[in-house]
Length: 494
Image (cartoon, rainbow, N blue to C red; front, side, top):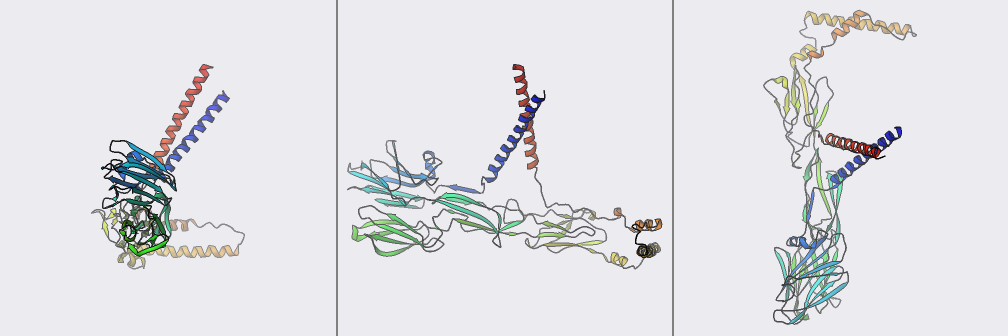
């Protein structure tokens, strides 16, 4: 019987521990799932998510004009940083041709145009760039969509291969110190991201970064270069050099190892065209792949002030202002109430006071602070009548009698102290009963004080922890019941 009980106890403990660890794992996953961050493919590329899949990022989209071959080409790359490119060719008859290109590889496929003239679609993956080129005596051209406002028509289009960039979001105070752990994301270049303005109790958001919502850029270091190669029989190379933090770039064209023509200034993510008249009149589209710095995003917050409340006879209370839980830039309506104290007038240095009701004994409600970053001092000032009584003026005979009794008490206390000095062995002196009674009578009655406890009306608590504990307990009980039935079934079978 003891062995069976030990087995049940053992399995019961194991079940409870397993449930606790499972709940903890779910909690950790929930906490670390960043609900304040969203990401998507660039505009016009989202339509390919159905066949590209969640693990692929479509970065290239072009129509093949004047061809009987493929009508559209889409290229995608893995979101995990794998540089292998997947290429899809969509045929007019509904057939899809799919193949992969490893870095530093190429593939050529032959088709015919609408005049039945042969041409070749040549695909190059140079590691840093992906290039599609029309070869042959044909009028077939590529119409490449970058977004809804930008398209390029050319016989050759080259795109930089997306890279996996680590992005860090920091939440700092006005002194540059972190107020919350930084959040890191791995984002492919060119992808659109959005960050939410998080709310932190006790802080207001004062500076929203310009790159809070943007398109992921490759670099944030001026001087960074990106090389795009063109293969259309001329071997032209374009070097883009980032000039400043905003992403402005200089485009230089090289042919045969030498720079040709003048440098061209391009705005962040801007476009241009280079005409190479002396090499067959070829036109090369230019595109600046640099933009605003997006690797590091810094939100800046400032600490809110607090109410410094000093109720007579009570320790000073420090209650922080409450911010709006739905807007990180606003302060919430303060629902803080201070008590009414008879004989005192309440004053506030950073706001106003209003009676809670017609009965002043219900206390005063504090308004929102005039300056959310400045402390508000709530003080109690004694009325003049109370001050005059404290100074001994207008005392009635009974008060004078008590005061005289207090003087007698001081004489008795002095006599006892002198007696202790004369008798060092005596360790305890018992005060006369008359003195003890007077001392008790001299203390003001607590019931006569109208000092209410200051409610923490500005704070709020959550029942989430209690709810979680109840769930864990219920699951543990269910587990024990199931184990008990299992043991009973085993005993019956034996």
